Length: 262
Image 1 (cartoon, rainbow, N blue to C red):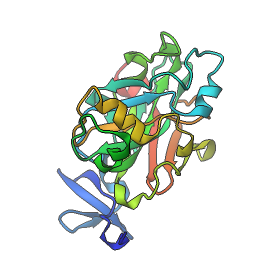
Image 2: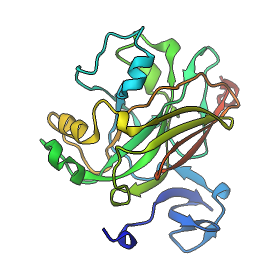
Image 3: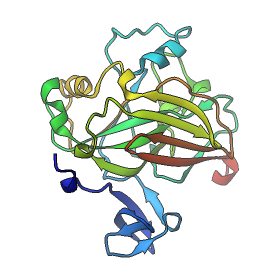
Image 4: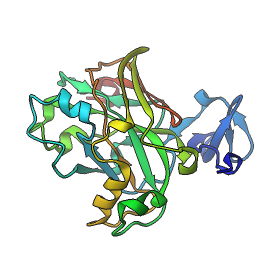
């Protein structure tokens, strides 16, 4: 593969009253109109036009082990899949509300797989040809609200502003093996979670085969592939950084109810 032909990572940002696509620049960001601006001077949005948001639960063997006392699910079960609405999404450097009544709210560092070509009835052997690229996701959960440990419900996983996506959409051709990437989470600069995508229970081709067997995947649909062990409670004021090797470093801050008039 000629890496010189691989497209640069892309972002979508708001700046000076307009939306722009942006690419990395040694001095910050290069906007689509040629201007170079500081990363801190823009509002970051999810880095592509998002379609259906498909999320996987309990898709890492070590995370399954971490929760084994509460679970009846096994690695032999069908993938645990749920959907999210568009209101759940925010971008890099965004703020996520932590409800006052929550006692245990945690991050989830996840590799997000972005579909680039319509997939219907696709076999695993052909699945990767339908992937446009990858980005980083931090998918928060509030464990207090779980009805049970096996089936996440809307109140836990479909919260406004609770799914952070970005900063970059990295072209699939720039990632030789998405199943050999290191994932890390830092809370206020302290490493709290680390793992590898090699530990997925259901790998990306298997997920695309499974999903496309009963639903049509369209360009812009995104699959959130689950998180490894190491989730811990986070509080108002915490800065949470989720990063994936070769994909990006996603920053988010927890804020309280008062900013939302609650």
